[in-house]
Length: 416
Ligand SMILES: *Cc1c(COP(=O)(O)O)cnc(C)c1O
Image (tube, rainbow, N blue to C red; front, top):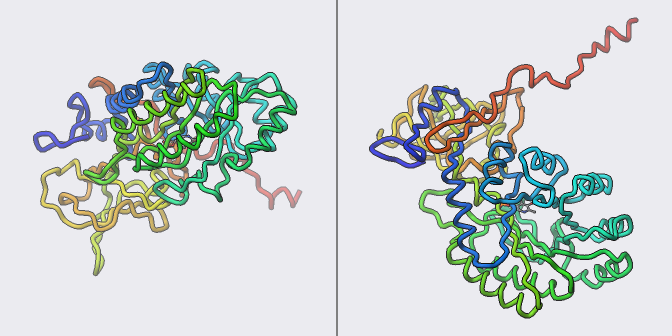
């Protein structure tokens, strides 16, 4: 969404204000052209014979978005059996889906085997159990490269104290398990965190992965994970895919030559593909001043976009009802009964009650982390494609809030 002739517009000139009017607020809007642009940036950056982009489903798991990415050629990375099932529903073939869970039961792994998806194993205990039951099913292993990286401690997952992956120092044990069970290791995977800017982190990670990969002679692919940075602040630096791509390509091709086989190169971007495509449109309910602060209270909160509160994430906020108004300083806050600040001390074009604000970069980990806290409905979702808008999730109703609740009057039962 950019400012054109004094109004904010989506691709093909679609006006987000009209969408807010048509569908109401709060509303998640996704611009398909930006998802496409980001997908193509990735595909064009890596010049290898077999490139596989596994979209990380958890970033934005609406089935219509999954379908759209699938039609462009993406495969899917899933972290739960339910996400794998969503992927199948969206039209992905089982072999196009990778299942990368953490701390799940053998039963859930077995359910994934039933679905026929690719299995990624992230601890030795599971590798041993799995190899015992399914020695004929090749698997990928997730390694922990012991690299500290990412935008926030909660999304840094490849360091030495992390619960994710098998330590690179445990490879002797892995090799024993492989030998004893006869299972084939078909892929080696790592994912170090989210919101990583420095290309050296990815290159160093790749070096660690190459070293490990040499210990497994029958690989089909190497998976370098996701975690690319997007510009949350206006004008902020983001992962320079066009610079990173050729550097990784060069080292990967060298590796394949040494290894003696052309492997597939896999990535799992979530945020990079969908973050910038999404905005959350909210309506201003009240303007309230205190001795120190002017608040704009909106019809949304941490129940709809929790990143600012959970990760101290910055999301740029603009007033699309009054794009050229004189900027004033606001705290934009939600309507939830605890402090839920979307942005503090923000210069925003003068806001009146009833104005529509757009919270930017809300495509990734926005709706997929939304909840019904305070018994509020989750937002509707709209996908904009080539000038047309499509409702891809209806707003919830009281029925959704009551679904699965069982009304028991325990006092009455006790009397009988
Ligand atoms: C979350 C996750 C990703 C995607 O991370 P982004 O920061 O959204 O790119 C990729 N792989 C795995 C295993 C993940 O858990």
